[in-house]
Every structure is written in structure tokens, then in C-alpha cells.
Image (cartoon, rainbow, N blue to C red; front, side, top):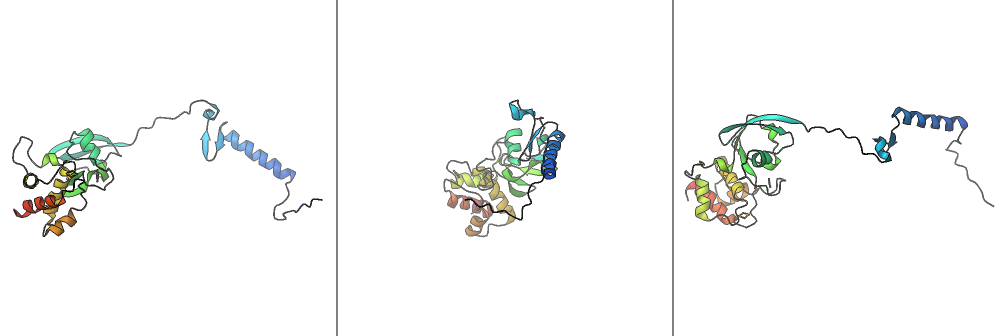
Length: 215
Ligand code: FES
Ligand code: FES
């Protein structure tokens, strides 16, 4: 013999309660214009096999004017564009390298208004009126004198594959301008955001020392 245990906290369904629920459901679905409401998403006829109707929405863009290596540049860019992509993809300045694209390696280091930044983490749209210097802007493009730190890198043989080198040099220029070259340990500390997979650190530090102090 089975025994039914009633849960007294739940009122038994009444005719008016169930009629109200059906009415609420019908009102909801018809208000959605025949659409089916599923888990917060409103699906139209596509739920029954047709292609979803999606309106193409252009990403927000803006015009930005900045100075790059002494030249005035004005570009219309997607607001999500990084400074690194602007330099490499739009302005053809491929000296700045995309290593990690996440702020972890320093291969993309450039100077913005004299301060070193990771170009991969910097939104270009925020650089209206800024002055950007890349590795291409350190030495004159007509084959003239190298920057003292570029010369020091060559003389100290401070690279192997060279992938990190432009970032190392731009960071080294910043490090020297900031005055963080009092000792090899200080240089290492202030250049620690620049990774060299080839392990040329000893020679990189020597190159920065040489350019800073003529050693
Ligand atoms: Fe920008 Fe690595 S590419 S930090
Ligand atoms: Fe190869 Fe630095 S020289 S990563």
C-alpha cells in the first residue's frame, strides 16, 4: 500500500493558477512577434532552419593624428587597433616585432613621448598628438650614423637571431634617458621587461653601459 506525503508548503494547483500560467505564456510568445524565447536569446525563424538575420555592424573607428619618427601621420583606424598593429600593418614599420602580443616579451618596445611602452598593449586611438619613435627612427634612413646604442650592440655582438633586438635597443634608449644605468645590476633591473630567447643578456648590458658611459 503506497502512502502519499503532501508538501504543505506548495499550494495545490488551482484552475485559476494554471489558466493564468497559460495566458502568461501565450502573451509572452505573441509579444515577441512569433519568436521563440530560449534562455534569454530571442531566435526568429532561424530556430526552424532559416539563416539568422544579422545586421552587419561596422566596428567603431576614429581618426588619429600622431607623429611617427618625425613624420605627421593621420589614419582612420578601428578603435581596437594596437599601436604595434598600426605601425606594422598600416604604416609599414616592421622593425618593432610582435613576440607575445601580450606585454610579456618587450619585442614591441617603442618610445611614446620619450617613454618606453609595449606597443602591443597600447591602443593607437588614444595617441592623438603623440610623438612615437621606433627603431626605424633612431638612425637616419639615408645610411647615416647609427645611434650610439645601435653601434654598441654591433660592437658588443649583443644579439644572435635579432628578433628581440629592436625592442632591446628602444628599451635601452629609454633606460639611458631615464638614468637607470648606474651599474650592470641596475641596467638588468630596468631592462628586465625585455626577454632574449637567445640569452644575450650579458652583452646587451655591456652595450647599454657602453652607450651610456662610453665604456
Ligand atoms: Fe609586445 Fe611581447 S609583443 S610585449
Ligand atoms: Fe634572439 Fe634576442 S637575439 S631573441
